[in-house]
Image (tube, rainbow, N blue to C red; front, side, top):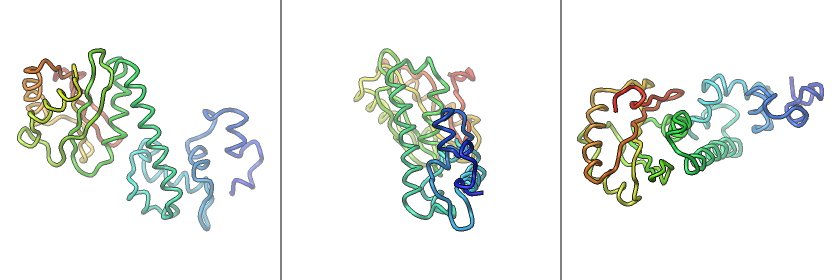
Amino acid sequence: MAIKDLPAGLRPREKLLARGPAALADAELLALLLRTGVAGKGVLQLAQELLDTFGGVAGLLHASLDELKRVKGLGGTAKRAELAAVLEVTRRALAQQLREREVLSSPQQVRHYLQLHLAALPHEVFAVLFLDAQNKLLAMEELFRGTLTQTSVYPREVVLRALHHRAASVVLAHNHPSGTVQPSRSDEVLTRTLQAALALVDVRVLDHVIVAAGQGLSMAEQGLI
């Protein structure tokens, strides 16, 4: 059924204005962003199919522009641009919160932030969150790409970037495109190598977070740091 054929109280826009955004289902919120459907498919149906395809809101936010482009109804630039804008606003909102409060006070927020940045990438990326003495975010940098091992991540470069930002501590992070967040033996060795290198310049490694689509694991919480 098209939105215009729904009773006024069930139309997403009217429902949001009357009862607030929390009253809307995921598909209804997404339909407001998409605004229109495609031939033979109403916007609510298109929204639900997108959620089903990508595994819900979190999966959709992790989808790349190329993945969105392959979905019938999102081939045009406008809808993809709007969804990409929502993703970027979410990233920036999380980054602002991490800059304003102690990172360690919200490990779940850190994982969400890293998932939005790294989880959807088709290749492994090693990133570092640089923190000040109050454990607030100074910057995040993606430093290395490709298969991550002790020999492909250069401790010297991580140390130089930490000194550049005058960081007091760091959170290491990388993604597993395979979909599992279980740390490998090489992940553990790499973490210890970077801990030793950063300790020489008095920078602490607070955590090493591994993310995949819809998942995140803290090595500190697992007792591995």
